[in-house]
Image (tube, rainbow, N blue to C red; front, side, top):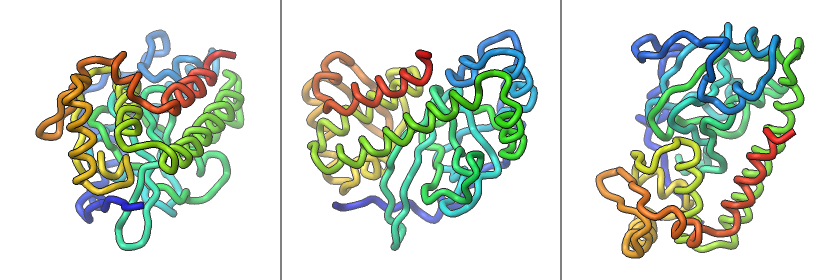
Amino acid sequence: MQTACISDEARAAVPPLFAREIAVAPVSRSSPTGNRFLDALSEPGRGGLLDLLEPAPLTPPAVLVEAGTPARTVYFPVEGMISMVMPFSGGAAVEVATIGREGIAGLPTTLGGGGSRTRLVAQVRGRALAVPTGAFAGQVLQDSSGLRDMLLRYSAALFGQVAQVAGCNRLHGNDSRLARWLLMIRDRVSTDSFDITHEYLAQMLGTRRETVTVSAGALQAAGMITYGRGRVQILDRPLLEEAACECYAAMRAEADSVFER
């Protein structure tokens, strides 16, 4: 299987831990944050966690956490999307999971592990709420909001996504996998139009950029999307869902199950 390469620029574009240049209102205990995980927590523990959060930008192609490095920060995306990328020798990499406003990025260190084998990359521009890993781990230990149980359910769902992607990449065609990934991005960024680079699409499919051109062209010719100059517009979601492989519905159901108990 062919893989796409991440440039040295992408690896070097690490943003400040908490950037002040983005306009984000202070986190309110009484208002929804926009992150589904945070908003599903109960009081009083939810308020204690919210008090620790700071705004952080998601600016592609910034590397938020490098593979093999313990995460210093836990991210709760509010807008935009973070990719979990598996790097290989020679600079090649393949995306194994996506994290948007439904979840959390930076969990392995929090759960007691060291550095993860995956790299966290800001893939779609937006913003997140962030907390130092140590402070978040302290909240998990106190756990007066159901945080630990939800964290375990979310971790299981994320692992399920990684496993599903592995099978999908082996069994399903490029066009159906591209349709599935575009739907997953749409669910995470909550808009039908988003910026996405040709390099990322190749990384997403684990294939050459020429293959991306063919698959995106097929979806565009069928009236499902438009794609040009690094921007995707979803035109017909029901048709795109028909084109997607079975993995989209399976992963969406698993993600929703985190919040159904």
